[in-house]
Amino acid sequence: MSVQTRPLTYDDLCQTPDDGNRYEIIDGELIVSPAPNLDHQRLLGELFALVRGYVRQHRLGRVFLAPVDVRLSAHDVVEPDLLFIRRERRDIYGSRRYVQGPPDLVVEIISPSSEKTDPGRKFDLYASSGVPEYWLMDPATRRFQLFVLREGRYEEMAAEAEHLRSEVIPGLVVDPGALFAELDQD
Image 1: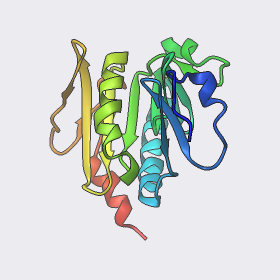
Image 2: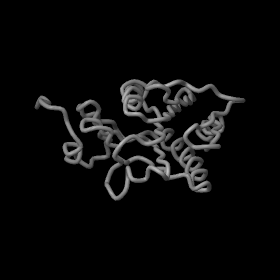
Image 3: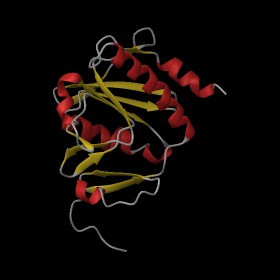
């Protein structure tokens, strides 16, 4: 077994096998996760349809689903479940194979393999990298948290009549109850 002797980079990430696992680098350390479970994917599909439909209708930018590498620094490359980039910032994805810099919105859906990373290391990384808005969803507990970056720290936004309003996607209102209800449909 080899011991990692230096912080890993995007070039190292490009050398990982295409084996169905998700590979990310946080603070130079390789993080390996298995493919997401079906509840994760169902919830992600519903959320993607909602956000992408709204963003397209209002011509606000681009919405991407994993797998898309987001290079936040030389030693931080993540693969958020969903991300949004405003039209004015489209230069951060251009013709590259990855997004260079912080998206305007990042969404992570917690899986059993990411229950410590998503609300912990990634939460801190996204804040320190300047991601303006972070959504954290947990299908197991039916919890949806919306965080907005204020003075370098995330502040959790309170729901209004059980709905959450995005600050980076003007006018977008999310009904977490309706999204989670989709998990109970056959």
